[in-house]
Length: 344
Ligand code: GAL
Image 1: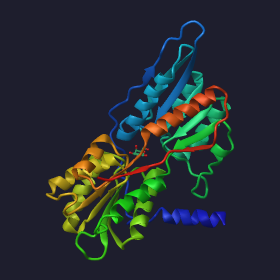
Image 2: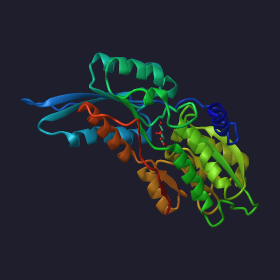
Image 3: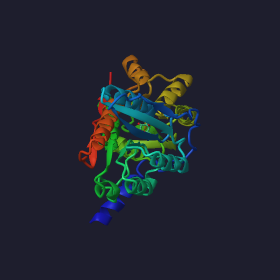
Image 4: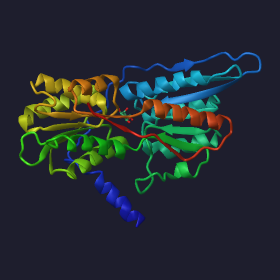
């Protein structure tokens, strides 16, 4: 049964046009390492916290990492200080693996990790556990065999946990945002919704689930037709390029542009305007994250909707769990933060 479920899961992830191709990772511009140190005086205890982010050049993860840093500051007391070091994995797993080795050598008291590749989760978990350092995985969920929350490296290690949001929920909300429109997304009244899909990094379960579950939810309301499905690697410039190409190829046939995140939706919005189309009148556009600028666009009608990816809730939970671990308290295996649908 387990094997059958695993195969069904693998097939489910292929839903969409099945034509997605990787276009290469977005350019990395920020490479710095951030360190926040507050000198402890007298008997105060300073904890060393290592935070490894998959890539600094990512709108959502920038909000997330900044919030980790500032939330740690708010938890400091006269007796307890946090020396937080944040490093940029530059979307390179070998680089990130070295950064984790450095964290171990530097004797970090806890590590918060946004993996570059979840396929490397075991290798990293093994070395961090062997070094006796608690590990809080964030944002990129390594999945168990059945595509559920049963990753052995997490279940088997009392000092390893995952903090995140269930990407199936965000995909479902995107599909529902379109399905709940008066015309269910069928602008031309031909009885089906013709869409293009712009995907994040295909190795990332957020991209896979959002692609699958958005369409699954919409299909429950109306038949769909996929015109194009491309990989934009979470990046605005790729979102713009893919949408511009699709609009010139398929023109008025495109009724909905689904983007796995808001950065790519920002690019799509620019391409839509450049092509003389108007969101809400002759095309619909949805993203995920609810970046401030996208919330504004939803209000103004320049985006049909987005889904709040709660970076505040997730970063605070990750930090709270890290602090628990520092105090020697037990942690759960998984911590979940809900997505929220955002429409006008
Ligand atoms: C997603 C987010 C994307 C991107 C990605 C990185 O949850 O929606 O914008 O930041 O994580 O893994």
